[in-house]
Image (tube, rainbow, N blue to C red):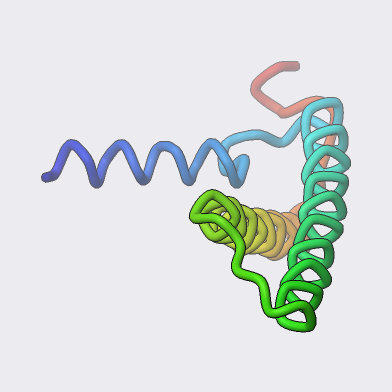
Length: 103
């Protein structure tokens, strides 16, 4: 169980860029995360609209629809949590192109 917890911690450190300070890595990653969040919001809106249409026409979607909706909402929550964590950690820290150790 400890190995699984350590793996989860390492994955979270990788997603939140805890040990990265270079602008060339952080800025494109933040743009990617932002566009992923926009796309997931678009998919969530489509899911809500299609659910509304299903209710209006008294139809039931397949099991795959529910699985896809759960995955989209899970990924949306994960991306928002990652983005908030990165912004909180980077807000107080100045991002420089070179670290003192590199010079």
